Amino acid sequence: SSRRNVTVNHDEDSLKHMISMGGRRQKAVDDEERTLIVPPSSSGGDLPDQDASATGFIYVLAFFSALGGFLFGYDTGVVSGAMLLLKEEMNLSTLWQELLVSSTVGAAALSALSGGFLNGWLGRRVCILLASFIFAVGGVILSAAPDKAVLLVGRVTVGLGIGIASMTVPVYIAEVSPPNRRGQLVTINSLFITGGQFIASVIDGVFSYMGRGGWRYMLGLSVLPAVLQFVGFLFLPESPRWLLAKGRSQEARRALSRIRGDRGVDEEYAAIRTSVEKEKKGAGGLVISRILSHGPTRRALIVGCSLQMFQQLAGINTVMYYSATILQMAGVRDVKQAIWLTAATSATNFVFTLVGVWLVERVGRRKLTLGSLMGTGLSLTLLAVGFLLAAQHSPPTTLHPVDAQNSTCRLYRSCEFCMLDPDCGFCYREDDSRVYNSSCVPVNQASTDNAAWGRCSNQTEATASPMWAYNYCPTSYSWVVIMGLILYLAFFAPGMGTMPWTVNSEIYPLWARSTGNAWSAGVNWIFNVLVSLTFLHVARYLTYYGAFFMYTGLVAVGLLFVQGCLPETKGLPLEDVENLFAGRLCSCGSSSATRDVHYVRVNGRGSHPSDSDASDAE
Ligand SMILES: O[C@H]1[C@H](O)[C@@H](O)[C@H](O)[C@@H](O)[C@H]1O
Image (cartoon, rainbow, N blue to C red; front, side):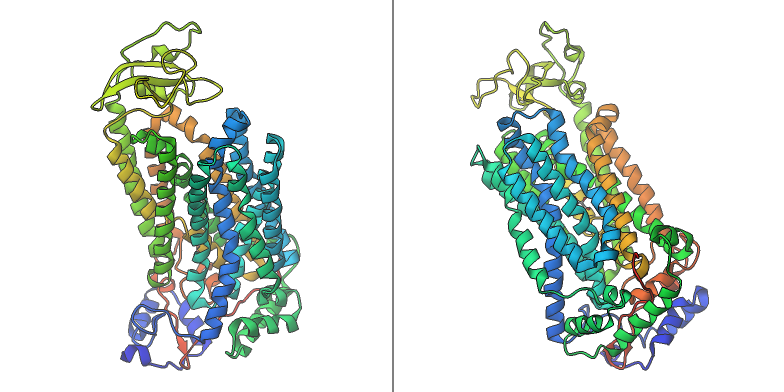
């Protein structure tokens, strides 16, 4: 308790000085001063007390902003269930199905990239209003769509909303948050993303019983949170940092007082103002070229974009989009059951994101990311081993029916090879989990639920008819795969699922912030498309276990990168974060001084955040 109550008469300068000192000397100082430094907690592991109304308001801000994350999650998640109904009703080819899924992600990539410019020009608040408006329009188009072309227009529209929201929301939350809560508040946005994916899977489950037209509700319900966010943001303030950068100082001051409640804001306001003025002098030219020609921001951008790239390369969206296939492999045959188990998968993702929100201010960004990557790598290995065992014990084909079309299917000797060919499926009978009378036959091009001809061409619920497996094989190693899947989500969600967004919101100076976030979010979406679109092809060439071993390898590279290059940003005012990138790229693994700086209480209060940077994209 003595530690808790010490009031240190440090001013901000001595804090900055401490932060910027490097090497062993700093370590010695750190050790000596550790008793004087108050950890970011007022009682054990809790966060410091603050003016209650200000704390309440900041959560209201975070909630309405994070609705953008919810819509991001909802619209990327809902489509898989909607597709099951749509493909029947609109007779969609595989190409159209892929188009309807990927067009959203592709549009998100483009709009995230242009979001940087919009953010600098219009401000964070207007961009969030714009995103929610686009979401609402997209939802209306989707729910009323008379044909697949209009559906495509709707999917592209919501993609445009997702892109802007995905880069603006973390920036806005980071800019309005006090430094000691910033990580947690930004991570709430990630919680809303996985929450949106979870709710989407539940809605998919519920409306799948409705049959015809159910997809209209699935896709259209996103209008509700979009309208809620739009109306909410009409009453919420703009980011004071952006206002100051635009020279609207009166408004900036008013916004800051509103956000901080009764607390005096003079010090914080002055600090932002000074830094804005300082930065204005060096302004001019395209922001991205300024970022690239300025060492610290260039290094921050490399770290930010790489984190987003590794997030996607770890394969999260193959797991999210193909979990139904993975679960089928594990023996789940019934479509309804598969839908509900998919909901269980996204629930796991959601629950473990909550763990991330809880941990981020306690263990810090760096440790959380490192731990998450290690666990993710191990669970991917387990998944791969599960698929490997399944492949090695894959049932052979015992029947080789004469094929009038002379397809390659009948040449495959086991289910494993048959399944990896997208033109073929496995038709078999089973008793006591023993597979017999099995054959590999062409799939019906109009619906993968049936074979093109023969015993499996007319699948009914009747138990007498043989079983049809497309994209998977019957196996008794499903439990290994399911365990791998659950562990994967449990490790991925709290760190790799959240930290790339959180870290990006805080590593750039103000003038580079919206552009930096636009580029890193763009990288995220581009790799999302790449990984999810190539999964089935990769699986075909490398097999399933090969694909998962490949993701393991990519995670290992990511681990080395994070170990060497990701500095700790926990508790630092936004202006001090830039100092972390002053040194060589990837030297942070060795300089512990900059990683472990705790938040110092100034005169018994939390010290004030400030920002050393200025005007945004002009
Ligand atoms: O942070 C999110 C989250 O992990 C989601 O589950 C995933 O689908 C997204 O691609 C990712 O950006």
